[in-house]
Structures are given as structure tokens and as C-alpha cells.
Length: 128
Image (spheres, rainbow, N blue to C red):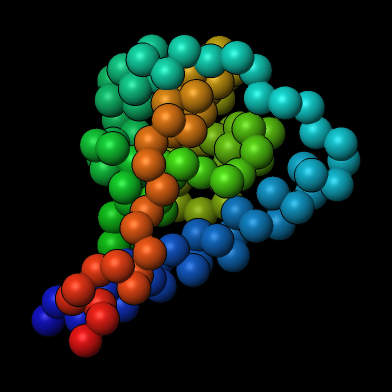
């Protein structure tokens, strides 16, 4: 049963990558600007208060059938903001009236402080 969970989690990550990858490439090719300075502590508070944790986990670790892992994201800020404003999947839109660009920058700053996922080869259960 555990292997099914891992397979489902991998499928969600692959699907999310396929959805978000075009945004990342598009932003990089247009000479994107650096992410605005954000406050990581405030970002963590907004992430919790606005319910992002319900799909993405309390430390943005993602869920097998909910939202993808966001911790230590490699996506540029513009791509994350685009996904917040006009989501490409089942995520609800977060318009600027609901989540300001400043709050989005704070969340992004917090996500960048989180550790990256461990390599699958470092997880004993996955090595068998």
C-alpha cells in the first residue's frame, strides 16, 4: 500500500511540473526581473492564514493528491504569481484583492528558505 502512495505522489509532482514548467520557461525567456524583497516570517503567516497549507502542507511539502510541493521552489516569482492569479489546475485563483503582490512576495520568500526535498536514493524505503 505504501508503494501506491509513493507512486501517486510522484504522479502529482510530474503533473504539477508539466503544468508549471511552461510558465517558468516563458518567464525566463522574457528577461524576468528578480523577485521583490519579501519577509519570510510574514510569508509563513500568510501561507497559514490564507489556507495554502490545506493543499500544499504546513511546510509546503505538498500532498499526494492535493497541491504540489512548493518548498525551495525553483520557479521564478513571476511564474508563481501567474499561477496564483490564473491557476492552470484545480487551485482557486487568488486575485490581488484577496492576496496582494506583497503577500505573494512574502510567501515566495518563505518558500525559498525551506529545504529542498531529499533525493529518492537517500530514502531507505525507496531504495529496495
